[in-house]
Length: 262
Image: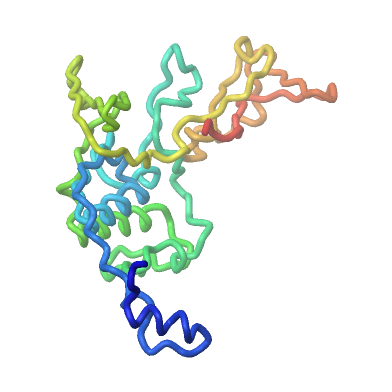
């Protein structure tokens, strides 16, 4: 039979006694993992954190971001005009932020462990425990700058396809926004999807909604209240909305607060 080291025999014979050496000192050191080329989709909070940790482990991440800046869902943008195929404009804008939005969590629990979410020094600072969305974006920008992540991000680059190859690697197809017909395909060892789940609104299917004369929109596209000023007393056309219990109201706007597709 194979001889066991004296240390191992002593541990087995005295399993109830206190060990002088930690068990890990008896185990062989783990071999470093090989460096992998990894695609990270999205430069929001999750994508930035993933890129940083992957690089710390010795890998080579490439971050694809369709916007021109980091921040993901915390990047405020005015809604794009509705198209004929998307009359509510529900899918035309990535972010769901409205102008007056504040966090519903205190900043102390929103930061990364080794990079606390503290109020920045300066003339324009939102030091509240539940700050506005601009302060969260500032924090993510500071995180990106502090850990030198900007060089990993390909801005205004959209991932349009991911395919598993026979050898186990992943073919990632992307395109630079504004360049018609130009697509690049590259191979990666793995893909980390960090594109969030608040960009594809779920629109309710309401019989007769297509013929309703008033305005419809999804809460995803709400930004400021001024466009709705003085509308509540002025119905357009018939403008009747009938509920399942038979009751009805006259309305100018149907606001779809029906969540997201994920």
